Amino acid sequence: MRRRYDMYERESMRMRKYVKGGKTYRTVSTIAILGVFAAIATLVFGVSYIGLSPAVFGIALSIGILCLSLLTTLPWVRRIEQNQVKKVCIVFLSLIAVCAVLWLIAIWMVIIMVYNAESVGETMVATMLLIVKIAIILSTQLLISSFIGNMILRYGKELVIFQVVTSLAYLFIDFYITFIFLNFQVNPAAAASGGDWIGMGDLRLLGDKFMITTLVLSIAFATVSSTVIKSVEAHRMMRSVDAIAGSGIELDEDYVPTAESMAQAGTPVAAEQPSHEQRLEKLKNMYEQNLITEEEYNKKRAEILEDM
Image (cartoon, rainbow, N blue to C red; front, top):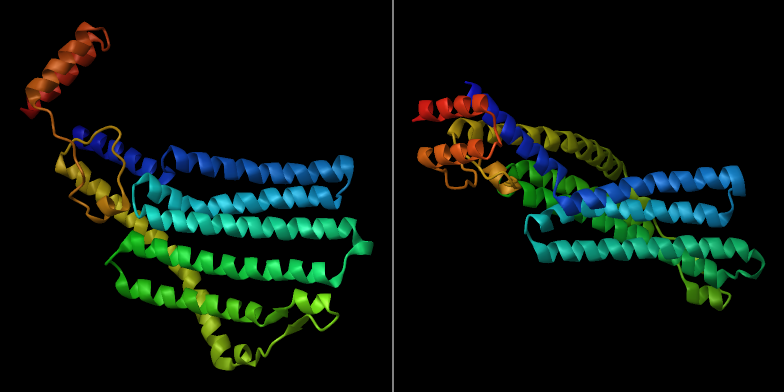
């Protein structure tokens, strides 16, 4: 019973190691968290000593954008560490970088316009709004496709109906948001020629009762789905822990379970189990090198002999 308990504890630690991710994952998440504190500190310092000038606000907002961008990279960083769909990960990471650059450009265009308010023309305002429009649309597509892609990669052929309905809910939310911003018309060329450069298209479709009802249901289901995903993931991890602990298989210390190995509970990737003779020999060497006490040696030796 004690041996089973110790094994259960080891596998639980490995599962927690999986949740925390590898070195790159932890580094990125740490930088993002520190960045949030840096953004807050910049705002506090600016308000207290400099005054909340546009430049200080722009710096804090830029740090915040970069931190949010880093947080959205975490699922793909984890998959790269697990050597999964690297090409897809690179595509998503590149799109995240593009979105971050667009938002930074928009932020600093606003800062420049504030400092040069007298000389700002309609063309620059229209260009800034166009960049914001593109950034919002691209960010929306990226977040929705990232969630759906990670869900498919995580569950594969499991929970197919749940995946389909969840994907449809997120796609409808994506359509609703995108439709609004696509109908927000900005034309820098028209602004340069003195014509009408901003306007809003026909949004009557979005005001239809069926569309509004579908949107509310989609948001509700998308919210509930995140809770269901966490619950299923926790159950899967515990099932895998139970299967490994009950199998008696010894795993390498550096073994980290992947989503696939957790899905195949009861058949984890295992290292070759050493023989009892090898375990006794290793234990004896540790005792002779004074790495363990005589009491520990005798206790472990008795456990190995009992297993034989």
